[in-house]
Image (tube, rainbow, N blue to C red):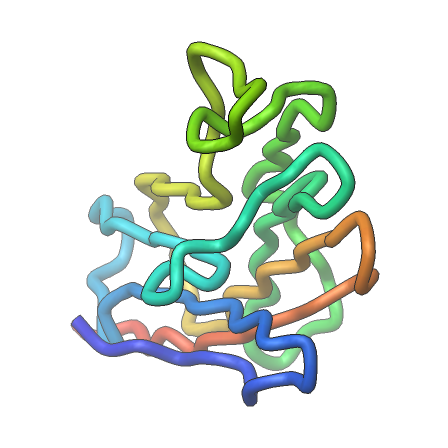
Length: 127
């Protein structure tokens, strides 16, 4: 599995897409999108990832296909804070998808403090 990531920003957020570089038509493959996974994103009530939007753009077209939109609760306090809730989420999404053409996976991520981030990863169809 290879990784495509956005360059490190001054605020430290790194969006990473993990998926195979090559896939077969109509065969399921796994796509994982994570934010600051290696550094464990702080995820506080004031500073959190609001959503991750996963899209696919087939080569030779400008058509944007929605794969999924994943929202996170902003009112939950992380477990490791003194007044933390008994459960919280991390900004990670794992999906199974199929394609019929080579194309680019786009992951748009919205941070409550730093705004939008994007990462892309090209997947090539093999026969």
